[in-house]
Image (cartoon, rainbow, N blue to C red; front, top):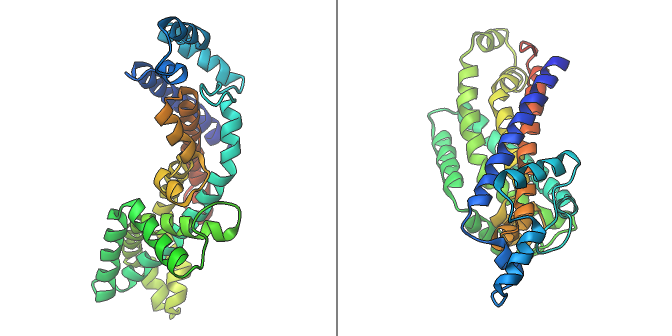
Length: 306
């Protein structure tokens, strides 16, 4: 276990280093000029040059990137060009909202998607199976803003069950989480169906049935724990995606997560914030995959960590 964690930490450090380099390089060669955003259209060339020198943007790429890495090693993600605040402070202020939406969104995805996948596998080839798979295709293909606005119109405007937008109470969380759950459930349903069908054909399932075990016990106790393993890897990926921010969903519901912060930074070419959000998202993906690798042996003891 310790050896696995150590190897993964080394791999994670190299991955994060690569992500930081690629992102920094792309922002460096970007045609848009962040200094112009700061100085304004009426600024003189001398003012623009002074601001560029103050921010260190007149230095070569290697100097700028080395200086940024040195700051990261000391826990400093830089300072926002426009908000004049440390990037770490800005991200930490948005992090609780993003974590809450991430947890609720993944829970909704699993509840909807796994239920659809299991039911479709049990009734394979029948009308129920075909209907659920068609539904999963629709949910995967549906645009985020369409689902978000539809739920908002029906449950907030017409029925008045939930607030139109905002953050702060459990009621504010329901519609954004449900939107993410509907949008992501199709992937989980398809993977769960395929995995469940394969497991239900296994010899140990036939043995369990031959012993006279109840159908519900065979499915929940024997088939489900083995079929759910591919889903765990998807959860690790979803952690990173959600931590990066679901910009459209956050925008529709006025959710103050990292996604909104990143979108505002992209519009203003606020490079330190873009770098900070990208690295936080990469860290979340790496951590999610590591947690998935550690959880799998707990579900299936046949798998050993080496």
